[in-house]
Image (cartoon, rainbow, N blue to C red):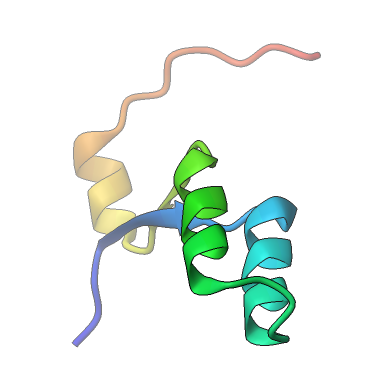
Length: 65
């Protein structure tokens, strides 16, 4: 069973570095959790259904950066 829309967090390099330090026994669990609690979450949205795009999104404008 697939999903039309999936939302979830994105781990940045600081998160990965903290997890890897913990897994390599270079950081205690308490320190790792403290570090991870300071990170601002980054979220991403994946729309995997053309139906959702067609029914729920409206084109507004396009411009060159």
